Amino acid sequence: MATTGNQNINAKLVLLGDVGAGKSSLVLRFVKGQFVEFQESTIGAAFFSQTLAVNDATVKFEIWDTAGQERYHSLAPMYYRGAAAAIIVYDISNQ
Image 1 (tube, rainbow, N blue to C red):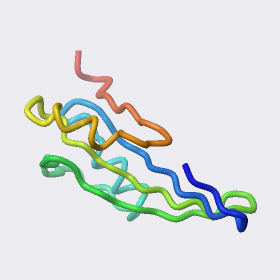
Image 2 (cartoon, rainbow, N blue to C red):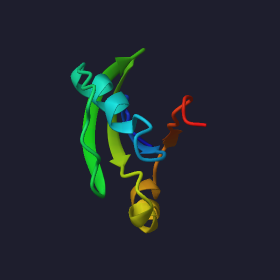
Image 3 (spheres, rainbow, N blue to C red):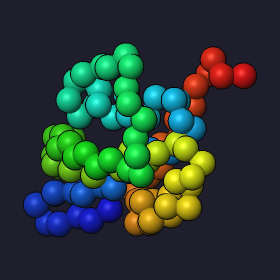
Image 4 (cartoon, one colour):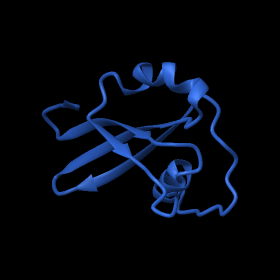
């Protein structure tokens, strides 16, 4: 996370979780205010950004929505390197 004197903050976030857990739905709701009930699976990763005013700072979230399929797991370290936070998403109805 980088901070400058004028309180502009960049925060890299990465969403992790199994396929179908709702990672893309969460990020689309946060960034675009949309909810798509039947979302296509992410291939590799998708990038989004969202800027918010938080107290006296402007925070730019750089969000990486990673694919949940097993075949993409080897790519995960590339996306979460340098991240300020990882959000782990899971489906509570999946036993």
